[in-house]
Length: 247
Image 1: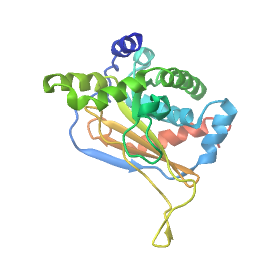
Image 2 (image 1 turned 135 degrees about the vertical axis):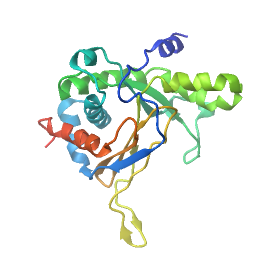
Image 3 (image 1 turned 90 degrees about the vertical axis):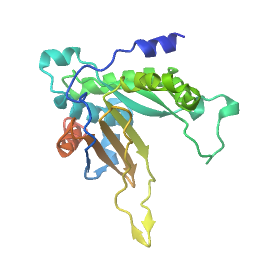
Image 4 (image 1 turned 45 degrees about the vertical axis):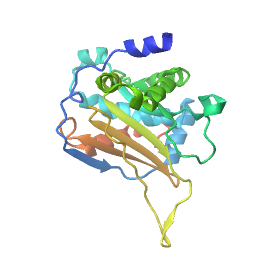
């Protein structure tokens, strides 16, 4: 009950340029591949995970696109909806067999430290929040509500969905691809990307994929919240240069 209460009372995101009514016209862009070792070197030097570094890059790129002044940023609340694998936390009778199809991902709503003034501050605050949320029941609660959505009466289904959608201004998903390059008709596939589907009224989706020793950021953004996704991607990669171990 404490977990449910904590989730329900989590403050909604502050009004910002990312919280506008959607137009239904989307822009799609993806970055140049970046060696995975750059992210690994930063993670090792700062005692965090590669996923923390990736979220730190997103937080840095989101900050200037909120349209908020310095005073408003100090009080700003902004969450990213991040999928989390919950298979290792399921009861034994519900654990799927290896290779079995199905959606076994919950969702955590990670507060992005958009008020953080330095890369290290943003990084360590993300580390703290992701550890706390992954140990909580929030991923399981989200998974359970999603799995039982079809059983919820129609009049209640949309309010329940809105409870989730109002908790975040962006969806960020990180997918590990194969470590080795894949081939199609004898030709090596040099890049691999996937796209985060739109969730409710959230107009910004950030896709991150690691493949064959490299990482790429992708963005699908509604025109109302982001007219130039390329600049957003540039800022994601620029954050790497701000770390001593990131060059």
